[in-house]
Image (cartoon, rainbow, N blue to C red; front, side, top):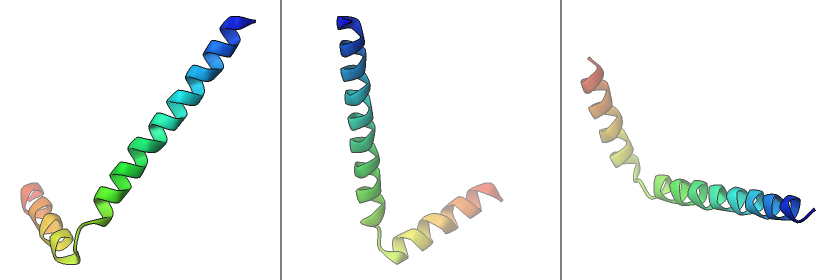
Length: 49
């Protein structure tokens, strides 16, 4: 029974860690100004062409 508890706690820690990573990425994405986003999109479009 003890292994199931350890496995459950490890799963919860994994979910929490994933949430932290997603929150950081979202915060970083929202800090861009509209001009920065336009510039990045244009650079990507030129790279593809």
